Image 1 (tube, helix red, strand yellow):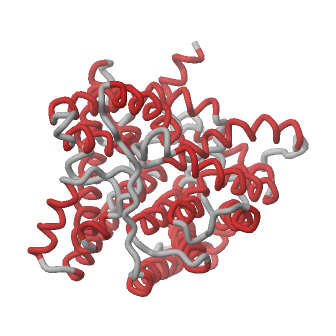
Image 2 (tube, rainbow, N blue to C red):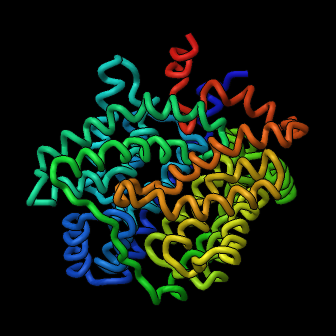
Length: 451
């Protein structure tokens, strides 16, 4: 069954709530610092080479970091509107990613060359930009490359940075269409895997021409109470809205959420289309609380990168993640700390604990023990994949998750062959495979490869 435009249109009213979320980000920033310090902080942000890990809260203050997040989120909403992109679960993913990563790596300037490149690709093929805007937004994971080339006065220049960004944005769509296939829907951060491959080519080229990009370690501490209150308020509000503000009975909202918990989460899993707004809002709030709990229980810090990770989980709550499939994978990272030499309080491990949920479909599809295994493997792999690319790929966990998923999937199929898709999984693939927005590449790109 194919969904029609009128069916999608009923979700367009959610745009106003996404603008409210954007306004809340700006208000939080303005309440946490003076306008003068925010302007000074925004200048610091755009003049910083922001490879992983560059916490904007650390280098510019929380006020500037949240205002930058609001600006990037506003740009995202405007692009989605101008491209006539249909609001669906992937739209919420894009908002979560852009608002979250603009706390530690994306800013309102360094994303533009890649976005322009992603616009040129469909333009050159005489195709609508709306089919590609999502991939372009997520391709801004490589925005640190733009900042590095533009700001490294001993090597790069601004025109060179713009050209590189155009190339990255242009090639990402066909590359994402290919990498989506080899991961079998088991890595939700498909574009992160694609960006990792591009970074593995781009960074050695930069080194060959004399550049010396390197990892950063700028990590804010001391904000746990403030950010826990802010995030807790947001999550509880989302849960209450899902239960009481969606014009359906409370029991229906809760029943929808319980049904959602029985899905595998294998991409594409557009929960907004499958279950409607109420269960998705409940799922988003619950997952945000889970992410915050894991960070605090592990002795971690709530700051730009970890808030970005939690916002990413909340975004993907509309596209594959739920309590049942993320907790086992996160538990695998906790288990890894008991057998390896690293600690849960290490910044990179805190991020791995959040972003490992890219492998949630393995837990949902094969069962929770395999989810724990996936998290355990991911926690070690991700600690080494950022070094060869010098932190230039913000979605490093997506790249690591892609490696783990690519290796694990055929092995688990052979070992756990008895696992059959649920009825909901079958229906989801029949209904969504033809029109899911990315992680799922554009459908016509897949058709060309099949031909």
